[in-house]
Length: 377
Image (cartoon, rainbow, N blue to C red; front, top):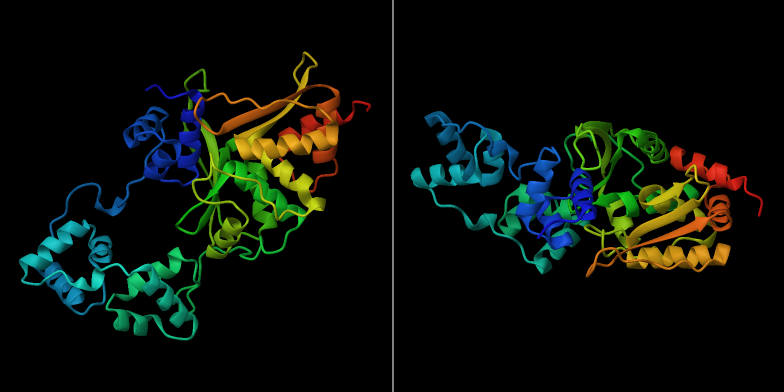
């Protein structure tokens, strides 16, 4: 089945934002092979699940094998962490362990959900990671991984974070945080790896800098090149990406409704205070909307996304303008919708209410909104 242009663009956007190919496959209901094929066709370099295993195969020396078996016998490491250390796969490590007369220990087993909850409760009550490791028969790294997945901050971390940010940014709803919720809802993502990421065109880097400043972040904004079907000349285009590791932010965003793999299931955040709703809407428009001022003079102001988000914007716009624009569903069988307000009066009213006096906004859309604001109502 041929992929639509929208699905192709969505594959690239999600992958660049940090979502894995299997997750994209499940979210968009297409095969993983199709996802990888499309990424390759667009010139986007794919990430390996275990990048340390890729490249030229390595042979381990006898001394390395002895050290591996010794560390494994002490229950200090897992086969995965040994693979990372020696640059080989987990399977290779297991093969050498068995060949040296050792058995693969059952302490690499997975804990049940109830066991994980008990581990977290004990840790938060004062138990150490090492004590929990010994009690439950797993290595310390396994305990740490469960803390990371469930957003439990480690109190005994040996090394400080290289980068930092205001991890409580979304705990207090302000114009800036509500705008960020909207923007991340539309053009960003949260992942199970406890990261918040936003990927967009390089020309819009300035909004990433504004968001970074608002979040007191020291994380870098990275840029890269990729080829898109929208480029008629076939040349690669520049993109920018901003990613922060913050279990606290991820937890807060999920509670606000911004969940992993949310592209076609996202619903509006009902916790947004009415006085900051315009900021939330502006974040949505800057991420997945458009403010058009063509030479023909027929202005347009629109938004696309899940049917629930578009319906929410439709109700908001109706309250402001009284216009009754209809939603459209361009892709049969998918909960993806779009809505557009054309002419002069409705776009001008939306521009004034959403962008007028904005503390933070995407510059190129704010400039077009400024033109719309000059229309007399």
